[in-house]
Image (cartoon, rainbow, N blue to C red; front, top):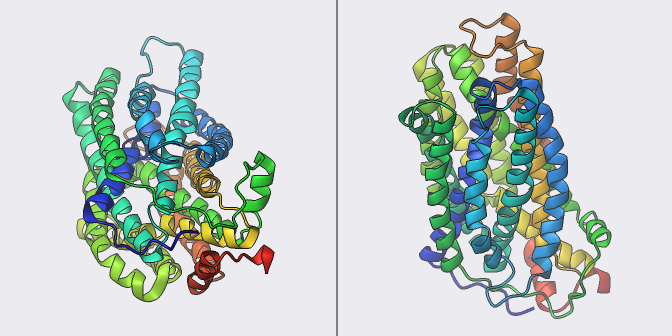
Amino acid sequence: MKKMETTKIGIKERFAYGLGDLGCNIIYSAMSAFVLFYYTDYVKVSALTIGTIMLISRLFDGVTDLIMGLIVDRTKSRFGKCRPWIIRMAIPFAIAGILLFSVPSGLGETSKIIYIFITYNLVSSVVYTAINVPYATLNALITQDQYERSVLSIFRMTLATTGTLLITNLTLPLVEFFGDNLSAWTKTFAVFGIFAVIIFAVTFAGTKERVKPSKNTKQEKLPFWKGIGILFKNKYWIMITLTLVFIFIQYSLNGGAAVYYAKVVLHDAKMVGPMNLVASVVQIVAMFTMAFFVKRIGKRNMMIVGAVIYGLGFGMFAFVGLSYAGVMFASALKGIGNACISSCMFAIVSDTIEYGEWKTGYRTEGLVNSASSFGFKVGNGLGSAMLGWILALGNYAENSVAQSASSVMAIKALFIYIPAGIAVIQIIIMLFYHLDQEYDAIVEDLRNGKTEVRA
């Protein structure tokens, strides 16, 4: 391996890298916060049907993630492994986002379901995967320095949160501006799509891939199943992937249930804007302090602290009732907890790449990140499916002025109780993670051409 990259990454490159997740979040946040609402309240398809489609799509999505990881590992170009895919997929990404929110009004019920199934899979399983897996892998190739990876991740998540903030606060006003009908959603995402293309171009132009494998790392192309087998020899990757599944179940429930919680429990659908605004602004402000804390207590401990605070934020909603100040305080707690988690969760995936290389003699950046991407997409898919299923179980009635007690309880379970319980599971998993203490010795071994398989 070349000498470990310790040169400080410049602010321009950090910003350019972070912008990539702002671009990705244009679709991810829309899918989390609005696609179910769009399908149920505008397209008029049942939540149960949509939840089932989302879960089936996520299973297919897992396969495409792993395939894309192998493609990234095998990519060789003058621009590197990851950056070419970011620029290649920018325009298809924008078009796919428009198609997602363009269900034709004249279709019958079956035709609507077929259109939704095809476009949802096109977006989540093909186009989003083809740009997000290379983007997620890019962190590990820009630098091998553990702290610098954390800083890049902080920039990434700060700008990702900015993207979420833009989408959650601009989508409904833009839909209303364009006429508050089916075509208004198409026009809104045409605007967002143009914005995304510009952002991805900046990420491509403003970043550089530097990290190379150890001189003794095996270079042959891995068969698919051998690559998967190598992944499961990496205990820390397993822990982080499971943690990501649970984190993204939380994110999906938080994003998707918020509009229902505001509409039904708080009796004002527009409250979703201030709730997300406070959580996002607090998270962005808190992110500026995260590098200081990560450097002192490590990624694993930050993940634990974040899960505690994030879980408390969800739990607070059970006690504050309709109090505006209480709702905003609970949202702020969620913002702080999410800042702790999001500042570390992707950088910590990159750290498991070095452990896997040391443990097995193979370096598989793309496969590690794609399989972790599979983990968080499974989480997002399960969360989205849970939204549809539990709303249906609670007998949620689309466009009804008054909801039943079971519907209200279902919404509270989705927005408060399940996410708070998941936070406890995250804490338990991370208590077994010890790579922070082992990382420097592992990188030193790799620098000297040593791996555990040759010890």
